[in-house]
Amino acid sequence: MAGTELTGRLRFDGWIAGLGTTSGTRVVVGHWPRSPFGPVSDVMLQRPDGHRLLLAPRPEVADFIASTYVFDEVRLVDVAVDRPDGATWAVTAGPLRLAFRTGRRPPLGRLLRAVPARLARWPPWIGLLDRPARALTGLRTTGSAGSGRTEWYGVQDLHAVTGLRATWDGASLGALAPVRPPVTFGFGSVPPRPGVVRVTTTVLVP
Image 1 (cartoon, rainbow, N blue to C red):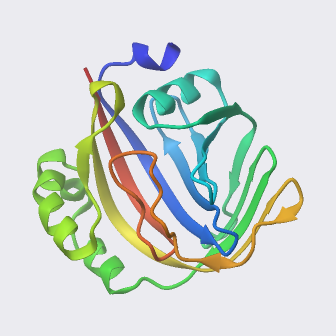
Image 2 (image 1 turned 180 degrees about the horizontal axis):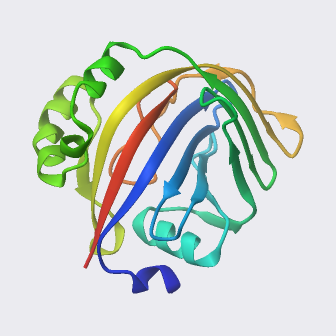
């Protein structure tokens, strides 16, 4: 597969949005202005019955993500993210339409912002935070991904999501809700409270 030809430490720099809906569908949007594939966005979606779907814009992107995480279905569709003022998001991905807005930083967001960005992105530092993060939040900052890969999430900021409009093929997915149960694409989920994190994800490909 084209995505597996990349080796070494690969860095994806951008944002991850984790959203729940009252229909039970949970959505994770990755928006990466800087990545090994150039500017790119993707969507991971999990249905109430557990079905895991990847929406990706190009075969090489889909191959790489599907080799790192676990999905029941992969679709190649146009994925576009528009952030006209930074706080307002409009996401289109095939049949999926999302519109949401972020609010103020919660206390954890202010704490994350206090860490110098260069340190926050450094895998050894991220590894040190994994055990405290699990104890305090139940979330992972590093772990083993698919195909023998290792992944580090260097989170540098956090904003809560304050509202959501979401449709699939024109049908509403319901109102904003916690991300419960947790998504199961990889070794960790997103926080249960809907939010957007500023993150640098590093993937070590053997």
